[in-house]
Image 1 (tube, rainbow, N blue to C red):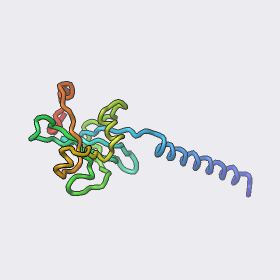
Image 2 (cartoon, rainbow, N blue to C red; image 1 turned 90 degrees about the vertical axis):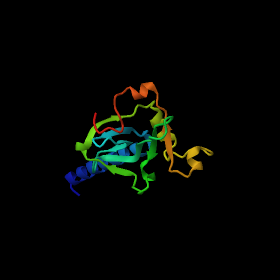
Image 3 (cartoon, rainbow, N blue to C red; image 1 turned 45 degrees about the vertical axis):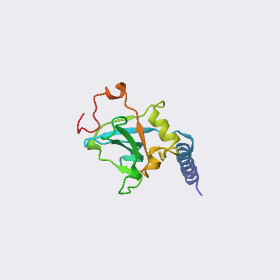
Image 4 (tube, rainbow, N blue to C red; image 1 turned 30 degrees about the vertical axis):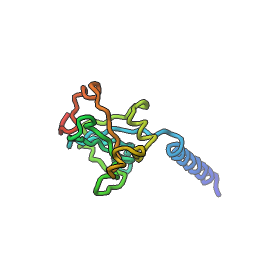
Length: 156
């Protein structure tokens, strides 16, 4: 083996080890960042942002409007629990994104998604008694409704 081949082999080995190290770090040691993505259709999704190989979300949750429930008009549901059974990945067309933001580390929704990713309701709750798909009710306060964004509207 020539000296150049040995140097190339060492460089490739170091790069490969560095790449594997980054993947291991991201998979096991970093806390996931959750994003909110608001689309032109008026849909609001939450999940882990994926930029490669295509733009989208994994570990996807969606905001549902409960029109008949005045006390809890909004709830978050796991995307895979929708009646048509999608996978836990949502490919998003970048041109349809109106805005997106990372959820803060102290966000109540982020903490909920980290501690209860399947959104299973506690035993004896209304959801389990009615055999509904798991979802979590979001409290609506004057502060949370003053943003000017209507989750059912199709615009900004």
